[in-house]
Amino acid sequence: MNFTNLQIQSENLPKVENVELKLISKSYFKIIAFNKLIFYAALIGFVVLAKYSLDIIKEIEINLWYILPFVIGFCILNFIIALLAFKKRKYAIREHDVLYAKGLLIHSMITVPMSRIQHVEESRSWLARHFGLAALKIFTAGEAGSDLIINGLPHLEAKQIKELISAKVNGNN
Image (cartoon, rainbow, N blue to C red; front, side):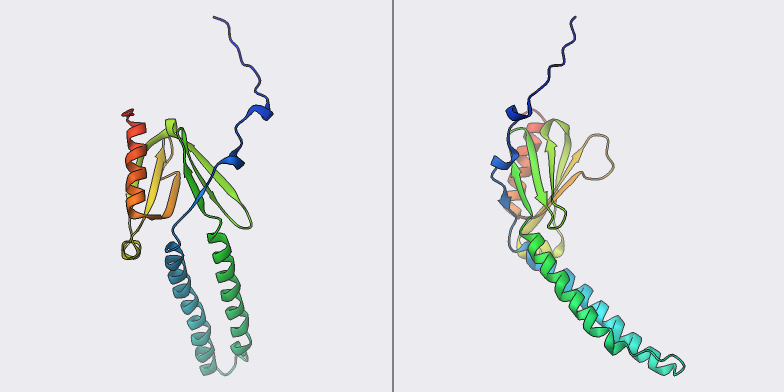
């Protein structure tokens, strides 16, 4: 038996840039916004509560009203970044793999080969059910937890993708 390990020229590799990635549902941004607004309300509430709590202790001379504009500015900037990052969340289901791209400042593209997938789950939070959305969790061999989660898929599409991947994993195609 002869061992061969031929080099593959990088020019001959398929171009990932040519893959047409699909945006996740725009309704998912409503869930992101809802979660962020709860966090912002808690953060601003903490600053206001700290102001009134520290006013009781007169030895501490801290004026937290000067901190509030910075906290509000942080919240606005964080929301804008979340909106811009949301537009970078894209996915593609191909014959031999699943692609998921995300990230604004640090862009990443995750590729999970179909041959490595052990099973796939579809999950829905109460808020996702309200908007008709689902998350697809893809598990591969040798890892604890899911390797890839695609949030914000329309429920019917998530079910169809789950069935397609399950059929490929089980060799039913």
